[in-house]
Image 1 (tube, helix red, strand yellow):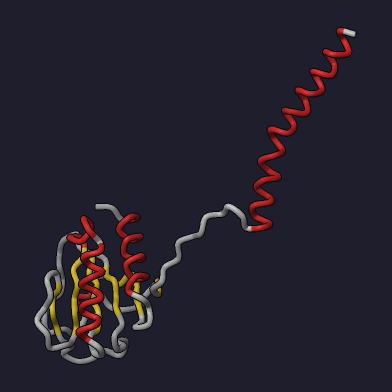
Image 2 (spheres, rainbow, N blue to C red):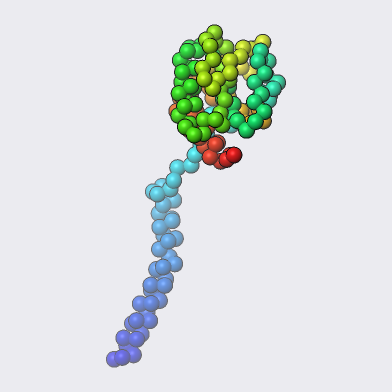
Length: 169
């Protein structure tokens, strides 16, 4: 009788070892099959791989190169300029302690520059310029993302926060 309990105990141990190694694979298969528990991937809301010249080559009336470790959010202010200026000023404030890492470059409009903003004009409109588009440029002045006028400011903020997170100082 003693050996029978021993055999059952050994079989139970074998089944438990088998379960420990197979249950995670079954759970992973179920997660993939039904899409349960899989985290969302971050996708940029703006256009990635922008084929634009560097900021220092843009035909602007004001030299907008910042030369330090700050990113530049350049935006065309052809239409609804006051609203666009306000949206991006609020975006800049929403960055909180990361705000010093961003400079806003407003291109167009007649208003005075808001705090943290550089105002400029197009000397001549480049062929790639579109009304109310925005561009995020890295600290070297290279375009990183392009946002058309229909992209909500909250999505632009989300992309900027993600870039700041993956590109720490």
